[in-house]
Length: 80
Image (cartoon, rainbow, N blue to C red):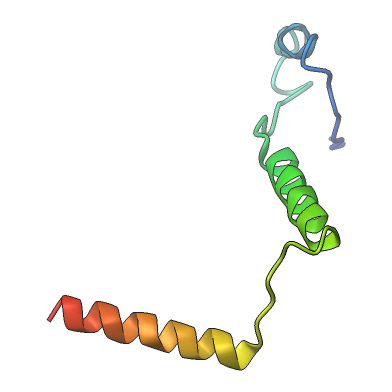
């Protein structure tokens, strides 16, 4: 059996799935119909646009680790 990935317009999506459902599982099987790829793509495009517009704030790995350590210590003391 072969596997393909298709991009289907929202207007015909339900009709397309209806068409595929007419086949036996031995002939055609819908493996997944989630939109995680599109959601990730859209998120990354937004992030890239923010970087390109120079609205992003960058920090070093050391600054990140220090901030993370402070947050962890704060959480540990509040739960003690």
